[in-house]
Image 1 (cartoon, rainbow, N blue to C red):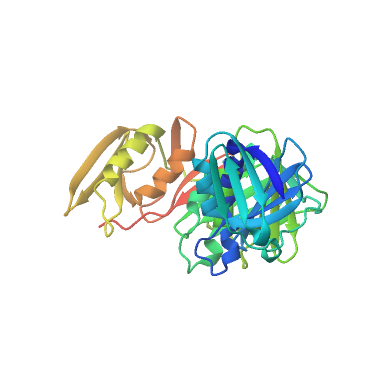
Image 2 (cartoon, one colour):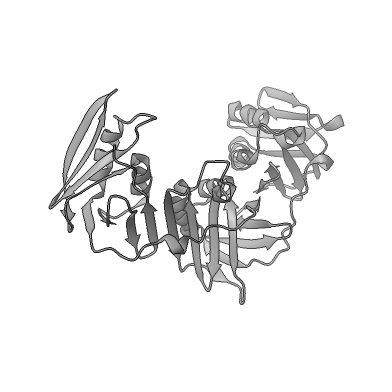
Length: 368
């Protein structure tokens, strides 16, 4: 195997696939990237057995066919430091590979490509397609609400549901819930998808999808509880989370009459400043609501206090309610409207942001 390609193109390709690698894996082969030269393309693949990413990199000229696996982090680091000149990759005996670029020459020991896990073939009919921009937006609106607690494994991901042309993504950690949907899906007849996609896959898709791209993402179920996403030169394969995702519809309250409306960016600033006074044992930031005003405050015996009054429209009786500030900052960062409206009922019941294709529910914290 001998190929020649530009340094910047190889580096970008490596950066696409290497994030799939788990550095803590006990299997040495999983720390490697598989490089396969076929006709006029180089195919790069990385996997941790749960998530796999493949990238098809076109070559300007026909190359010798062959394959090798090389250490991912070392290879990426070397290519990053090489000059912006053509790189010659040549596989020698015993899978040893040389990289030559200008006056620089590296020799890297590799492992047999036969030991690399088999990546699913792509002769699968897509169950649905959706634009890259739409899927990227849905991920941005929900991914932050996924649970990070390993004890609640079914919540360590997002529910992906595609039915009758509507794609919905749902994430929750038990204390907040984010639901985003779009009519942009094109499902096959009599086909629906209702699966829980792991958090790592959701984050990688959010990173790899291009917001300004007109291209579509093809979504195809695979055997052995796997799902495949294909867009542009990238293919992402993932194992799905086993189990039943919580029935989130049952916890969504009916629209409330009491609402708070305020400027989104002003609220972001006030919450960020109040959160400077939070500690690991005292995280709650207090919202004091009254006619035409909102006071955001935090008092800490260790750090001091912060208090800020904002103009707002509030339709209910005076109320004092506390929240984890990060739960609000996460959602405020992804909303685009200048003003935001929050539905409230009591200091013990969840607050709700309800938009045509988006819903966010957050539980309050106890006032201390």
